[in-house]
Length: 352
Image (cartoon, rainbow, N blue to C red):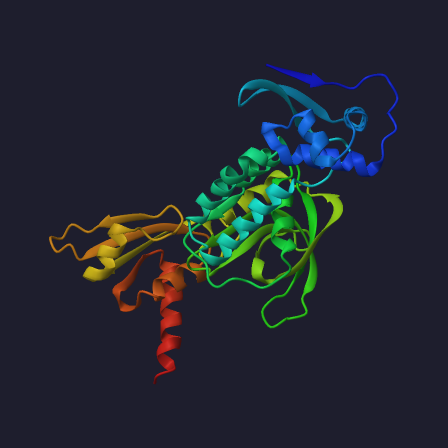
């Protein structure tokens, strides 16, 4: 059973801003379980009359406060649940912020596909205290994070950077434009870039987590290493993207290899691997590559497999292949074979 507090025609009652925000914060912290009037009064050390005024003022300002029946030891009672924030409220509850910060630490330390399990785990840990807006945030973020393999050492930067990125990604239906202070290789000072955030990506070969976003100056998809983002802020504009930019970004998210991608249609790559250790490893655990398939070569030896996957450019795949050394042979496509040959000849020249 539930009932709702709805706006009335009466003018807003007199109540201090401090009391108003205290009541709002307490309701937020109570989350979906809610809190009783008696508990609110005792917790905030305010009078029942002040509480009533604050609740009425919040409803007039657009809040929706539901009354739900709840069980407590020995009796049934009514709890107040904040179903919708008033118009002046911003951000998320401190419990949601804590969960996101825990998830950030997990990404820095483990950075593997297990991180996909951390976000819902932290959400569940704090679920009793999360508001409906907080829960919606987590639902949206689960669809906005792409992961593959693992990443390297933790980054050092402003702790609010990652939280601001996640909040922007979770903003629907249109994310805000962001200004990021980005430090490229050999550029410690960095420069401000205007982007529309799309996703967070990371994989084993990249060795880091990236912000995948639309660069409004170059009008192209870009991968920005999160460890190099020194600051981030919104500029007050909506990040409206057409179908072509969205298609480019989604293609980049699906087919990046080691953080590398090109704005082209993906092509098929086939690599033959031999040697019992590599073959066993790939049969047990297929490599973290786009649309990967591991096919055992049926020659009776059990010592060869073919790795088939897709990519949109050559640098990422070539780096993955070269780590296997002489145990790997590119079968197709021809332009990757030629690229590999040129790189290997250059490497051999160092030892001539």
